[in-house]
Image (cartoon, rainbow, N blue to C red; front, top):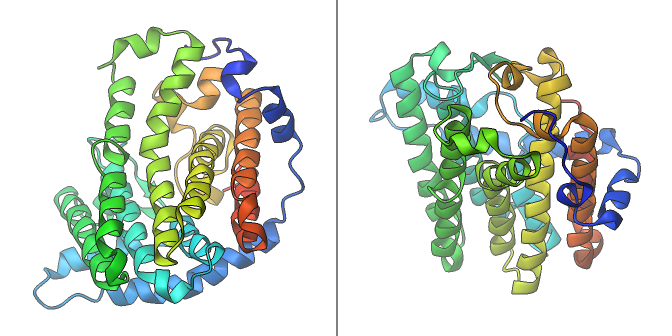
Length: 330
């Protein structure tokens, strides 16, 4: 239940990690902003071009796809693809197809998550959600089409030697054992289909939340990093470092998102805030409180930083992003 006590050992991987997490170096938000703007300048024209469909696509469907994908966004997942490639000695051009595909899967997941049968949201990225701007049936078809287009793009644009492995990585991340499975379990807990979760002690709820969000949120971050590495012909040691970073980063991102839903500003966020608590949904703040959530998030951010230290200066953007993600205000 909300406010149930959880021991510090359940919150962080040891006291040393907690201490490190509480003392992250200062975050240069302006520098991160510039870096993300460069990613947007690189990726958004390519997204727009990829969404220029032929006359065989139904016009309303094509319009909804462009609406969903080209809405203003941080483009974190494409950034992770490009920066992972860069960290492993690759180029943005070689990684571009993978970055496009990951963002299409992300956009599809948002369109479907916002539907009345799911999270029932009216606002996304500062504008009406897809089913509000068009209609529910179009939104469902929009998500379906974006998912297919993602794999078409990946198969066409990724280097041939790694295209099959890339499609496997993205399919697993988007499937029943990862993104979709995490969303299903999140809904099941919220709606009482798994009553033991609501009645569990706080430590058990924390483990449940981490299990859900390592799939619902974290799996696509992991895929973005692996795809970036694959596009750069990364070796297994480099891929392992990227995966460790992704596991910590994805959970830190979700904790930050939960904190922003509890305390954030709707105008800055571009979506409704406070809705999770209003629905009685389990989140990190409702299970362990705001401060303990911050402690856990900071520890995870530092874990991510340490994970890619072996990549040296080439991973500087990944390091900066991990430290920014838990301190962000939108």
